[in-house]
Length: 132
Image (cartoon, rainbow, N blue to C red; front, side, top):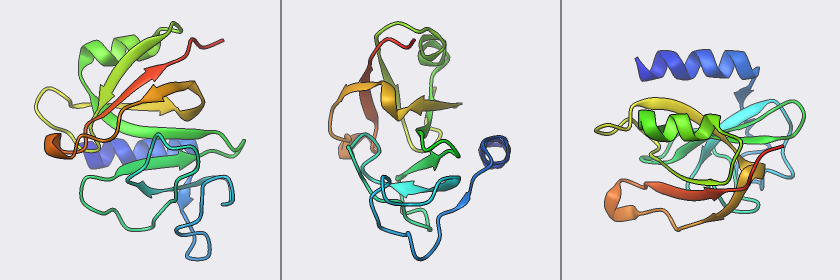
């Protein structure tokens, strides 16, 4: 089911796989309207890769150049993401336990983040700025 949701999200966001020419380059330097995978989703300018390494996050660079982190979270965190206020959220790169809700996090909203928790399947914890 998660793969189906991801395909629908890619279609909705109008993104295609990152090109071989752009693979590994910082997202500020790659073409718009692409998706790829990254172990550094909350960094300032991480790279996109074509194939998905284990426990890496899917990222979408939209046609306007904005960046989304794609992950899985709980219903509670999903509701928090719908709010425009400052908040802390947690996501995994793959569905895990109660973290089954597919969400996107606008990269521009990240105020701070903790390093990926390698001991907890690369859980990402981020603090988000208010939106709007």
